[in-house]
Amino acid sequence: MTTEPSLDADTAGPDASVALDPRMQRPWPALWALVIGFFMILVDTTIVSVAMPRIMEGLHTDINGAIWVTSAYLLAYAVPLLITGRLGDRVGPKTMYLIGLAIFTGSSLWCGLSDSIEMLIVARIVQGLGAAAMTPQTMTVITRLFPGEKRGPAMAVWGATAGVATLVGPLLGGVLTDLAGWEWIFFVNIPVGIIGVVLAIRNVPRFPIHSHSFDWIGVVISSVAMFLLVFGIQEGETYDWGRITDHLTVLGVQTPLPVSVPGLIITGTIALVAFVLWQARNRREPLVPLSLFSDRNFTVANIAIATMGFAVTGFGLPLTLYLQLARGYSPTQAALLFIPMALVSFVMARPVGRLVGRIDPRFMAMAGFAVSAVAMVVYALMLHADTPIGWLVLPSALIGFGNSLVWSPLSMSATYNLSSDRAGAGSGVYNTTRQIGSVLGSAAIAAVMAARITAHLGVSGDQAEQMQGGGQLPSAIAEPFSAAMGQSMLLPAVGLVLGFIATCFFAPIKRHR
Image: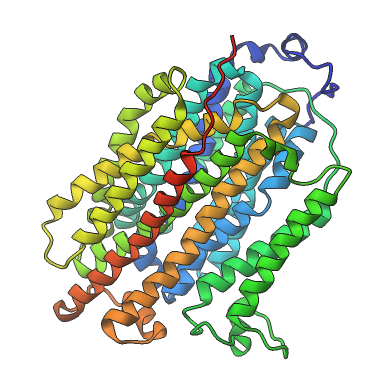
């Protein structure tokens, strides 16, 4: 696989790019080719949630081990995004995309063949690394193929893909789990990945590349910060927010040093602050060019997309566990409740694509966050052991509607003013903040769920985890368990409210004439 032809960033105009690769004149086939892979990797952020009870049963693990199947993927996905965006600028977005797609497809086979929770978690880490190599390249290609004034419809496709994929995941996961077993939520990626490779080779152009140095110190500091924060938040309830020195065997680590959950979180926060300070002091080429945040809309869009990632990842698990454990539905039956979300998002994709290029996207994003937050609160109030299942269709459809109004306007606002030589860095930062939100959403919802189960059922965190993996709950505890899951849904609602507040600070986009 060869790298793309080098061309100085200052002299590479559109005409020069077209001369290098005539596929630059056909941007839509390139976009659709990349959408296939992008859809697949985003489906894998949520497809596991509906299969978790079966994974726990098949691999003999508890809820915390199963949650690490998602968290490990999200963490491995999030941490490298900054560097893979820069690598795309250096070796070419097409080359990086194909490398990532090959890694993702191969590790999907490994996931499906795993016979222990530890092996599955390791395979998911590799899968996340492949996803990290792919994702920034999709936004980079859009930014470099479509000028600012024509980028709205393209970003609408990107946003609709992101929105629909995160909602289709649970539905597809339920059907595959019931019909063929949980392994097939990973095996299904193999033919899709092969098709994606063929289409990308055929349709995606090779772009001029830009020479970049790499901030390895920044990579290390940011990786350490993210791991400590995510592990501390997710494992806090398990260890009663105290010392965990004797329990680090979950990571295969033995240490005589005292380790506590608050200590991990504080250290992670300090490392995160140190990373930002290092980026400000790095005079060569920082991993995160802080000058990107001089664009107000880029800053606001990053904050908002982090809250959206937090909410989308956080709400699926309590809803799925409620449906399967409190109501006794199979994975497929539980997944049917996600159909209104996915269907409304899909139907709304085209009109949103038309509107995002014509009206100020901030108003669409504000409406989307508001509707989604209301829907999440409605869910929280409705989750009872005897709620008619038909009533839950309304908040499901509302989430799909709100979701469709968020992704495209945010991505449009984030990339509108990005120049071609900053496309990789900008898309890397944007996708990183989205994934950081998803990682924290996955970790935080685990802690909140365990806390609410303990509060309602009077059992310890460990007992709660064992209970969650034991099949349908007896009727005597189904109602308190439902209440616990409903109250857990308020956490993603809070995230959506924060997203709404952030979008209020968008500046109007100045259309190019």
